[in-house]
Image 1 (cartoon, one colour):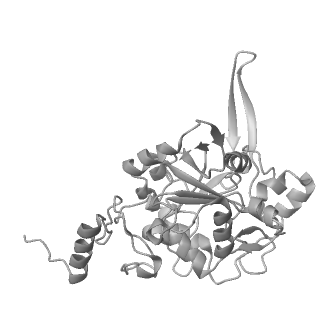
Image 2 (tube, helix red, strand yellow):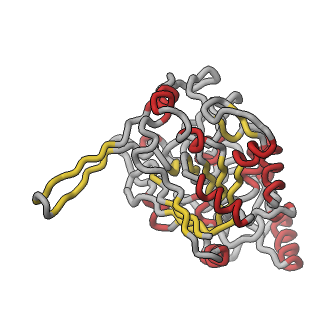
Image 3 (spheres, one colour):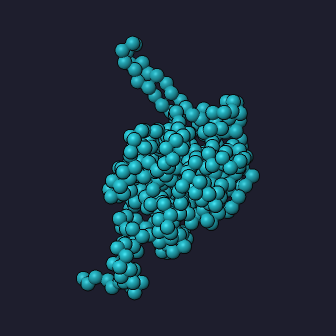
Length: 365
């Protein structure tokens, strides 16, 4: 059988690659080792997928942007280890003592095997109760009820349940690379920007850009002349953990138990990234392997638009989304050293059929 002829556009792209020593992702499935990827506005149309979906790594792909964590990029990220200081980013499993959105609390029991000689312990928890990665089964593209790469609710639960988008696929691949911290909370304190992490406050792309500039980082993708590399893991500190430890337990609990329902009048209210087109372009076009922060929802909650960032990040692009990371010590260390990049490694839970996982993450400076 003869090879299919490439289109004029593909041939032009190949010629440009030869002249610029690049490798452009064009034919699906994309090659993770490519050095140039389409912007959000130039994504290919995929039959059966919502507009702007980037289901581009193959029909049986369930790791999404983690494909970008290639051996070459992980090896390069190891150069970020200079002092060898390890900074875990995990809250205790019992924190928050009452999780947001009225989720189940963490339960821990000691099991006696032989008194004074041997013990086990038993955990009962919701993986969304603390420092967590939202997996691709967590949040669908609402208009079509499609999860990443056309996974459906019936794939997750019921007689036809299977392992599509199961969290164990992440575990089998691994999650390590170059981390970047944007300390927006520290920037806000410095600039006199006042807001309550326990209330709705949308952080704009422009604010993040200025925060990065203050730290000496151009948060644009390298393709646009910025400092963000393909496969980076972006972490954003917005102040939730800082405030958590500064207020009484009953106040924290009352906030976590505020009535929850989808819509602008949701009484669960948290600071986070704003829902705006510039933010969507940035989150997509940087080709982060994963994004995360210290807030309960990562994005400002509730959304005041007709979409959620969760829909794009998880369902359309297959990008792990982290929440309630403890970034306090990491921000302090980065500020002391005036260096905001590091090696980051996470060990997701190896649970076949799992929806999400605790982060089990460490930054190494």
